[in-house]
Length: 169
Image (cartoon, rainbow, N blue to C red; front, side, top):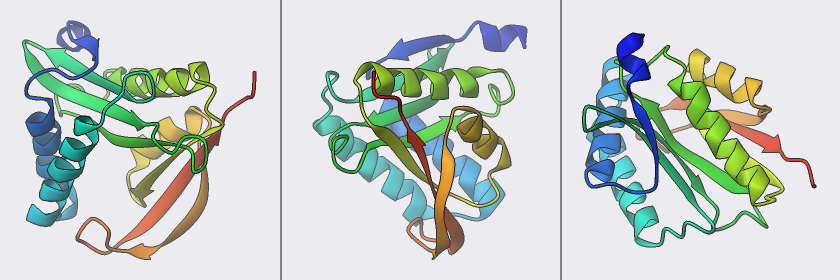
């Protein structure tokens, strides 16, 4: 735990972010869920496309860095915040940081950003079985609103959408 505390939260893009976030997703989901090339390529492609239009006034990107290496991250895509909601995406932590409190910190930072921007809601897509992540989402105010079998990540899973309705201040 002491080594996890030496990590730092950085707001915004740093070199290596795209590759490392794609790598963390690719290795974790291959090992635990059997996802393959399609999924890792989808993460890398969509994260790259997002960052080409990234606007820090509208979008959020936070990475956790330890010893110069990206060890986790989370994104808020605010491009459709006023009609569909802000989209929470690419939340991941390395094995070295799982269970250290950084996941809760990343989710709280993303939600706080959306509250500050006065976005009406945040949504995310995930799938059944990611119990630790679901616990973090629900403790931050997200609620399951729909689920169905699907294969948007290249493997059939029970896809779930969670929504967090934010207070209008």
